[in-house]
Length: 242
Image (tube, rainbow, N blue to C red):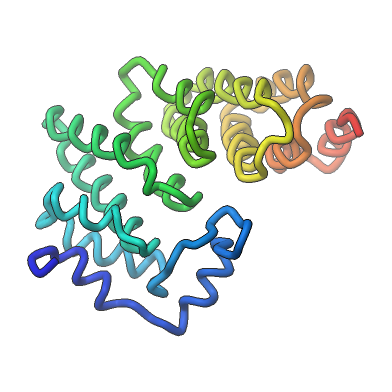
């Protein structure tokens, strides 16, 4: 690791006093979704500042070392750096493809909600804006982990931001077809993306929900209708089956 500046800069900023709090926040206890994850005690803004300082000097070999780390913040730093390399490549489609391939071949290390949410739509979402999006459907439907499945829906945030809502709704339908109960973190992710789609076209969201709300998981529905009026929220929630 001697020549890996990203690794060394992250290690240099560890703060043991923050470890316990972060471990609780990211649910690392036995049986929880982040069970066994380890922390250095570094907040996200600090990690971002390191990434800003180091990304230009970081190789894929460096990223490989960091993304395989037992430490959560080191993996996050690797993924945020990958996003920066991807974004700055712009017209270098070969380099961008290399970034996408790296991301998809290391999903086993993208194993918490923040690692997904802070990176997937900034990389996969952008990459797929002008491409076939079957990949996201496959991840949502058949992802080996809840994190791969979450990548499938959260990546559509980029499409929503460009006014393209079809994939968000179609992938949300895939989650509704899954055997219940659906993991809470997937319910929240789908509900969140539906809410974002609703900000673009509220009537479309209401129409979509009207034919599905009775059988939707409660948390998913609650997240999707969060921006509705009190009266509308109550109306949709009343349709839920016990």
